[in-house]
Amino acid sequence: MLVEDVMTRNLRTAKKTDSVRSVAVILCTNKISGLPVVEDDKLVGIISEKDILNGLLPGYRTFLHDPLKQRDFESMEESYEEILSKKVEDLMTARVFSVSPKDPILMAASQMDLHRFRRIPVVEEGDRLVGIVSLGDIHKAIFKRELNL
Image (cartoon, rainbow, N blue to C red; front, side):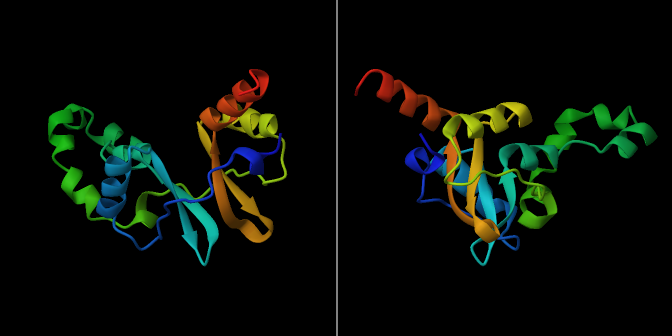
């Protein structure tokens, strides 16, 4: 089976200039954990719940300079409003791994396992985003095929 056989084609996406607040609303209301970031239909990054939450945590240098203050996790949580006012490009992951629609599904699954994520963008030549595939998509497809469903 190929990635194109199981991938999701109708995607929600974000732009680098979108607010993190607008992304958080999409993530929460649609019960998804991340969005591809695109410019002119080309994949330029990913913004995820993890990226947003990592924005709340102290950086390594901040922690080294004032470790006691940075352990006040309740006050860190209060900075969430500040994080939401940022732009997607401030928090997104720009180094994105992707697969091709013509790749075998187990190759995509191995990439996800190697990099420890549960979904991977699908791009055609020139980094044009055409879909996304998850471990769940792959498992369901194999399961249905094996049970003749």
